[in-house]
Length: 219
Image (tube, rainbow, N blue to C red):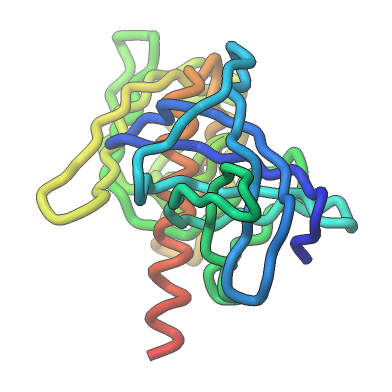
């Protein structure tokens, strides 16, 4: 799956934001470790030097045009007189597969508030049914909004114990879909003009939840 010469994207993440987006190439590997050149910053083109054990998000594109991603950490290494970085080879259960140009969508129950730009309309205080980097779906007991209506969203993402990220994002309603009798409707909302660091935060939350569920299944 990972081969010599393959390009890797490394992202350093602090809190809820991606600090550096970097590119490198695999120069050697074995069943336990991947060795790669020191990466370059995507924006500046400059070589980036890691501190030992820096935590990163690693992604690569397979021969079948599928994106795989996992979380790891980087060590500095000198092999055969050549300075490089070392990354643990991922275990199968650590890999998350994402089709290109798509976002991972997960079922999750999060607090969210939906506000219309029309102040005469009552806000919707509810919870999510699913979430992705491209949008979300929420439960609504009545059809308050019209299709393609612009809305403001306040979304709460719990990452670790007592670590909550509050995101204020803009969205556009897509459709209402009826749920089971007595359960109301599913309101699908697409994110609009979403800042990249906010999208990265949402994607990271989705990946973290996927990994957590996989680990629980292994127990």
